[in-house]
Amino acid sequence: MNARPFPRMKMARAVTALLLFAVLSTAALVHFVWYRAATQNIETVVASLDAQSTAAVSNELASNLALVSSSAEIVRSIFFQGAIRPDDEVKREFLFLSLLREQPAIAWIGFGFPDGGFFGAHALPNGEIEMVDIGQAAPGKPRPLRRDLYKPIPGDIFFENRLKAESVYVPEGSPWYRLGRSSAEAAWSFVNILPNGFEPAIVVSKKVEVFGHFEGVVMVAVSLHRLSAILRGLKMPEGSKAFVLARDDAVLATSEPSDGMVAAHLKDFAASDALAVAVALAASREKAEGFRTLVASKALGPVFVSSGKLPFEDWRLVTAIPRATFAGDIDASTKRLIFIIGGIATLAAVTAVLFARILFARPLSRLAEQLHLIERFELDAVEHRPALLTELDDFSSALKRMSSGLSAFARFMPVEVVRPLVDGGIAPRPGGELREITVLFADLPGFTELTEELGADVEPSLTRFLTLSIAAIHAEGGTVDKFIGDAVMAIWNAPGDELDHALRACRAAAAIRDAMHAMTPIAPKHDAIRVRIGINTGVALVGNIGSTERLSYTAIGDVVNLASRLVGVAKDKGVEIALSDETHRRSRGLLDARLLGCVRIRGKIAPVRVHTIDPTVPG
Image (cartoon, rainbow, N blue to C red; front, top):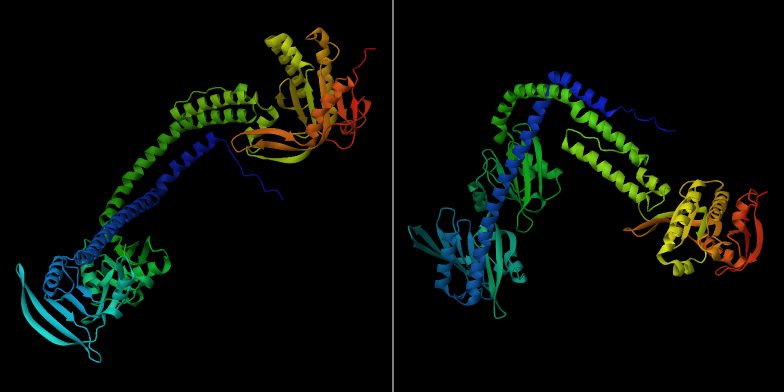
C-alpha cells in the first residue's frame, strides 16, 4: 500500500505564514521561550566555568603528584651517580630531610635495601619529623628499629629524642618495593601499612641500579590524609567538592570529609553529604573514565559532576559543583531581561514579515524555477535572476554557469545518459546491468586512403558523415555511445526501454545509407559503397564502466564484438549493411532483408547467419 504524499506548499507562502505565526504567538510564548533559551545559555556558561575549575584542580593535583615523583627521581639519581651512597647515614639523612621539608605534600621518603633493611624520613601530623631506621633481622630475631625525632625550628631542625625498639615491618613484602624492583619506570601503588603501622597512602617507587647491580628501591609516599589536605588547599569554587578515586570507585582522598570521616568507597558516604551522593549517582550511570554530567539533587538543585583521568595509574579526579554556585546572579538578571527580549522579538518578527517576501521568498522561488529547468535539462531557458542578497545573487549566477557547463558536458555524453544523471536516475559510480540491446557500428569505407589522399581536407567529410549518422540514430531513439576514429557506435534499449529496438536500429542504418547516397561522393572511387554498417542484437553488460575517477556509459560483451565484426563482413560481401540473424529475428518480420548466408567470424565457433538490407529501388 503506497503512503499518502506529504502535503506541500510554495516556499513564499510557507515563509510568510511561518513569520506571521511567529508574530501572533510571540506575545503568548515570549516568557516561556526566552526564559528557556536564557536557562540553556546559563547551563552553557556554568558548564564552561565548571570545566575550567575542574581542569585547574586536575592540573594542580597532577603538578603536586608530579613533584612527588620528581623527588623520588632526585634520590634515585643521586644514589645512581654515587654523589651519596645509600648506606651513608649522615648524608642520606640530610638529603631526605631537605626534600621532606621542601615538599609539604610528602609524608615519607625512604629507601629499601636488598637485605631487608629500611631507612626513611617521616613527616608527622604535628609538624615534627622522625627518622626511621630498620635493620636487617638476625636468624630467629625481630628487626631492630631506631626512631630519631626532630622538631623544626626556624631555618633548621632540632634533635629531640631517640627510641630503640623492634619492628615487624618487612619492606620487601610491601607492594611499593615489589613493584619498584620489577619496573624500569616509576611505579605507583596504594598501601595501607607503612613502617609506623596503619597509614593508607599512595607511594611512588623507583629501582636504583649502579652498573647493573641492584642497590635497592626509593619510595616517596603521600598519605591519604595529606592528599585530602592537598585537595582542600586547591582553588575550588565555594560549596564544591573534589574526590580522588581509584579503581571501582575506591576513595583515595576528598577535599571535605563527610561528618568528619573519609569513606573508603563512594557508596559508603552518608546520605547527608549531598555532593558525595551526587557523585556516586553520576559514577554509577557513567561508565567512561572521563565525563561531565548534570545530576539533580534535592538538597542542592542541579549539580555538575565532572570526571577526568589523572596521569597516575587508574586514578581520576571527580569534582561536584552546584549550579547555584555560578548561576545565582545570572538567574536573577535573566528574569529581568525577559521583558526586554520579548519587545525586541516582537519588533524583529514584524520586520521579518515585511521584508521576507522581498529578500527571501521571491528570490528563492525564482531559484527553484531555475533548478526545475535544469532538472528537465532545459538548459537554454536558464538565466541569471538578480537578487538583493549577495548569496542568492551568487546562487543564481552559479546556476547559470552550471547550466552552461552541463550544455558542454552533454556534447561529450549521450543526452539520454546525461539527463538521468542530472535528475538522479543513474548513480555516477561504476556498475551496470545485463540487458538486451541492439548495437550498431557505422564507418566510412577506405577512410585511411582518403586521409592519405586528402589530408586535413578529409575533416569536413568526416564531420558530415558523423552529423547525419547521429541525426538518423536519434530519430530512431538510439543512444550514441562513442566515436572510434571514423566510426560511430550506437545502442538501442539502453538506458531507456525500446520494445522494437532491433527494427529501429535497422531503420537508422538504412537512413544513414540513404543519406550518404543523397550527397556528392567524397571521391569518385567511393561512389558505390559509401558506408559500412554492422548490427547485432543480444545481451550485454550496460552501465557506467571505468574507475571511480573516470566513467564511461557504454555496453560491453560478445554482442558488441559481433556487431563490430559485421562491418568487416559487409566489406567482404560487398554490401553496405550487415545484420545478424538475431537482429533479423527480433524485427518480427517487419524488415525487408535478404539473407547473405552463413559466415565464419573470428572469435565465433559456429558460422553466423548474416542478412543485409538492400536499397529501395525507385518504382
